[in-house]
Image (tube, rainbow, N blue to C red):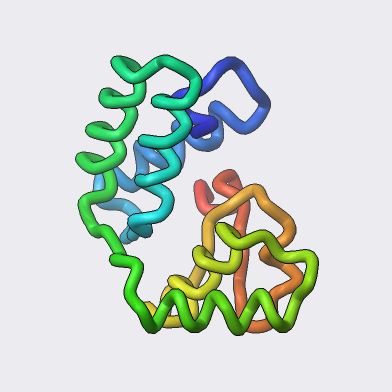
Length: 128
């Protein structure tokens, strides 16, 4: 969202990370919930034409999509029981990370740092 959005300090590192993924320099997955967030956000703010482009580009750059399964939903529920402050979407992304065996969760969201076993990195940390 930073890469496609308005000017922001996180925009440039996000764009550079997506370029590295597109070039094949980094192996990356996106979960289905992240793609759904793109669809939801752009539709909600009345910018669907732009949202369609953002979605299509995301799918081209990161063609590997982790599905949201019953196992992942169950794991997210457990995470929500363990952390009363954790938001549901974050729990879902963390559950995808755990279930799929991902090695790094790329996000600016420091809430992931509270979850045991999650190795979160900011996009700029992966540009080196």
